[in-house]
Structures are given as structure tokens and as C-alpha cells.
Image (cartoon, rainbow, N blue to C red):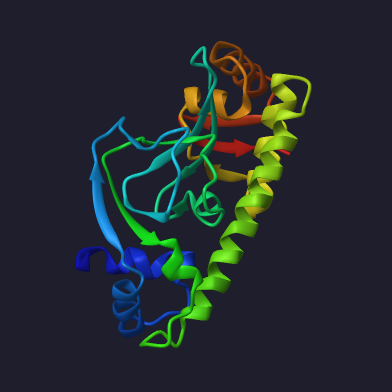
Length: 219
């Protein structure tokens, strides 16, 4: 766990907590470290989550699949938490799966120890609770954005909605997205072939330029 302390400290969940405080808190929160090969599930639909996950290395995809295997990517996490909302709702069954996009090392925090302030060595325990609430609120807002993108009528409109939101969030017309073409298609709920065709048209019309996952919007 020691080798991942810089990653843990940089996560928004532990924002404002010093290295000395962090060492005490990790013990108090009954954390455990687990490693997962690429393309394996950290959590599956139907599981219950008793711990909040934090990606220490690699990246995970939060996906939703129907019984026919159609996949909808809800989000991607690297250095961020996952399954926090489910862990905070005891007994609720996951309607999503968490999949290792790459080899992943994850830390799991006992949610009961996170939400119940203890009297020993955790003066800043309340801060982690505030940080957790902030993370949950931010993820809720991002999910709302995703619904806005998916609610557009055409593939082009979905792409423009997504790129506009990313440009505003990052404060730049030039940025990298976290998705491959197939992942972006799954995220926006469109066919990959149609998405690639529309991107090509948008480039030909001078609306944007791109190379792999790097995009430049021309406005």
C-alpha cells in the first residue's frame, strides 16, 4: 500500500488530509488492496457492495449490459472511486458491473468505518465524509450530463453535446477523451460504424479535427 500513497493522497476522497493523518486513517478504515488482471470483473451486476473502491493503478469501466450482451458504458475511473453509492446504500444490488480495462490495483475501504466517525486517531474523519459527499454529487452531475448526450436525436447531436460538455469542463477546445472509438460508441449508445462515419463527416466539414482520442474543436 505504501507505494500507492501519492495516488491515494491525490484522490478527491482524501483531499485535505496530510500524509501522517492518512496513514492512521487507512488502518482505521480497514482498507485492503487487491489486484485484477485485464478484462476481469471487480464487481458484477447483482453483487452487493460493502466497500468503497479506489483505483490505485490502471483503469476500470463501469458498464451496464442487458441479457443480450448489449453494453452501455456509464463511466471510466482511474485514480477515482467506484461503487460508492451502492456501498452507501446497504443491501442494494448493483445494476452495473465494474470491469478492469487494464491490469488494475484497487483499494477497498469498509464503508461502515467510513461513515461512522470513530473516537481514535481520526480527527479528520469528518473531512473524508465531506469529500465522499462531494464525489457522489459530482458523479451524479456527470451522469446527468450523460443522459443529456444520450437524449439527443442523432449521432452527430450526441457527439456535439459530449464534445461541448468536455470543452466547457476542461476550459479548452483541444482535449483528450478517456474513451476508444468503441467505448465512445458504447458511452453514447450508438453504433461504432455510424459514429466513425459521423466523425469523418464533421472533420470534412471543418467542425473538428482528431487523432485517436485527441480532439480539436473548431468554432
